[in-house]
Amino acid sequence: MTRGDGSGATGVDPQQLWLTPAQPRRGRKPAFSREAITSAAVALADAEGLEAVTMRRVAAEVGAGVMSLYSYAPDKETLLELMVDHVSGELPTTEPLTGDWRTDLKAIAHLQRALMLRHPWLPAALSARRSLGPNTLAFLERALGALRPTRLDGVAKLDVFSMLTGLVSGHVTYEITQAAAADSPDRAAAEARYLAAVIADGRHPELAEVLAAPGRPLTPDATFARFLDRLVDGLATD
Image (cartoon, rainbow, N blue to C red; front, top):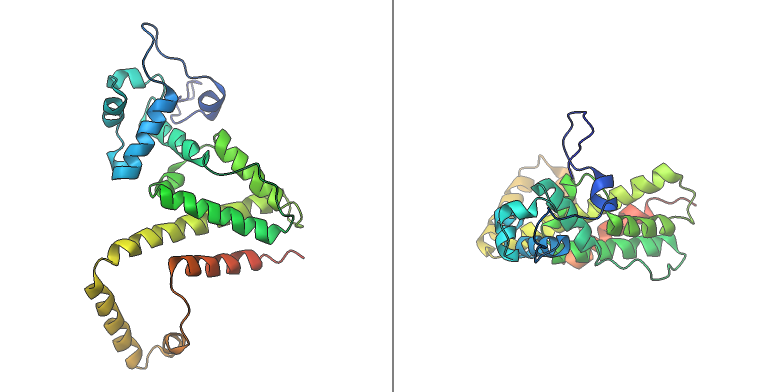
C-alpha cells in the first residue's frame, strides 16, 4: 500500500489501497481477511486505545503470523486508514435530507459525535489520516448534499465540513478528558477555588463578569449543542 512510483516517497497510496482488491501472498489460502484484520484492530483500539494497536497484537487476535498481515496492511499507517474508514461505515448515508441545510448539518455533526464517542480513539486517528476511503467519501457526499441549498462554492463547502469535523473531534476529546477528570471531585473543587481567587484580584474584570452571569446547562450534550449552533448558525449564507 506504500508508494512505489520511484519517487522515493513513502506513505499510503490511496488508489492502491482503496481501488485495488487486497491480495494475499502466494501459498496456502489464509484463514483471515483485510476485514478481519481491520475489525480486530478496531476492537483493540476500542478496548485499550490506539497505542495497543500493533501489528503483532493484531496478528495474535486473528491467529496469524505478523508477516502474513503485510499483504493486507503493510504498516500501522495503512492500518489506521483502514480502521477510520471501517468505523465510518457506521454512519448512515442513505436517509433523505430535510432540505434545511442547518438542520441537516447539525444532524451530521451529532452523528459524528456519537461515532467518536463509541470509538474514543477516532479523533486522534483522524488527525493522522491521509486519504478518504469509500465509507468516508459516502458521508462526505452526504454533507456536501446537505450544503447544496447554500450559496457556498465548492471550496467553502469542504471548508465547512472540515470545520464541523474539527469541532466535533475537539469537543469529543474534551468530553473524554473531562469524564476521566470527573472521577476526582477534589480537582474540580480546587479549580473552583483557583478561579475565585483569580477574579477576586480585580485584574480580570471581563472574566469576572462572565463568571457572574447566570449559568447555562453544562452537560456534554447541552454544551455541544450550543457550540454547534454557534458554528452552523453563524454561517448565515442567506
